[in-house]
Amino acid sequence: MKRRERDLFDLYTDYLMSSTSQTTATGLSAMLDGSTSHDKITRLLSSEDFDSMKLWKMVKPTVRRVESEEGVLIFDDTIQEKTYMGENEMNCYHFDHSKGRSVKGVNILNSLYSNQDVNIPVGYEIIKKPIAYCDIKTKKEKRKSEKTKNEIFRNMIDTAMRNQIVFGYILADIWFCSTENMKHIKLKHKKDFIMGIKENRLVALSIEEKKKGKFVNIKDLKMETDTIQKVYLKGMDFPVFLFKKVFTNKDGSIGIMYLVCSNLKLTESQIYTIYQKRWKIEEYHKSMKCNTALGKSPARTVRTQGNHIFASMYAYFKFELLKIKSHHNHFKLKSKIYIKALKAAFAELQKLKNTYNINSA
Image 1 (tube, rainbow, N blue to C red):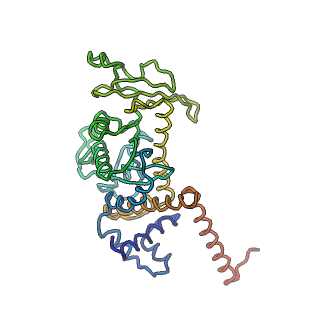
Image 2: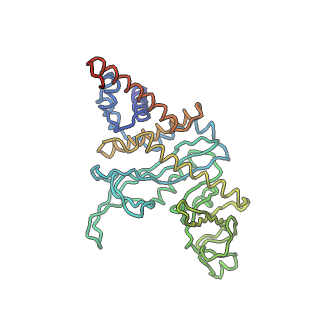
Image 3: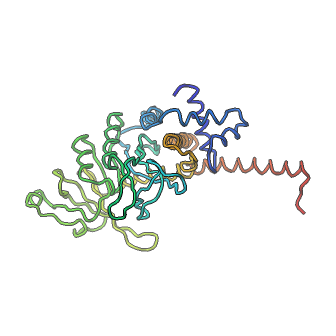
């Protein structure tokens, strides 16, 4: 960005960090008493496509200061619902695994670098569906992407490797635990992974059984909780550790989680401790939605919608820098901003009441 554009971008991202309601170019201009016209902000958001490469360039200096082999690269996607916004290739229907149904919104695949309690977005891809087609069963028009989410996942790993980010493990949940993805990480890039895995995957308990084609479902293995077992996943030539964790849900029901780890030197506790860092990306998604106005822009074009999302991510990064210095998390920082704004609003109300002599009985 040129200096003038960077200054405007800083204004806009500060506005996203400060706002508690819908964010618009006119709203920003009004907040600044017209010192910056809304046209300038509109032109900024519609002038060019801000993308993952630009984000990396902006966060790279901070990553270089904190990166080490103790760091992890975490992948996950999130959907920002936009039910009432017009449909386009970006804002359309995506399957939401947490709800078990398709929802209308923007689907973003994110890459978060986490180390030393510092969490930095280093890559992202907005899942676009430009191809319209007619579903044979329902006779309804639907959309699909030119690339699968797993293909995009592998491309993002390639980019992280080209950017020479230093990390020890790639973490992801069960939706990215495909054979091709695991091979891509371990064989192509010589990196290790810890991922959630579905219980219906097939494994062999030894290389001999693998060669004979003797595979069993993970759920049929007699494993105790918090234990590991070396297995061979069907379709993969290298062994992995399978880890089992039994836990109690909030509603009292019992859940079982299986993890696969490509590093056979780790212990059970190390595998689980490292994988727990995956939760950082859930916190990232929540902070963007609650603290940096991810879903609060009325922008309607693909470019302006995408650039607002980029700005929301960078606003998160600025909150992270504040967190490092202040030792307050994003929600505490947002609360401090909100309380200050509320005090100013309350004081202005009292001034208006006194000016017009309106007092309560």
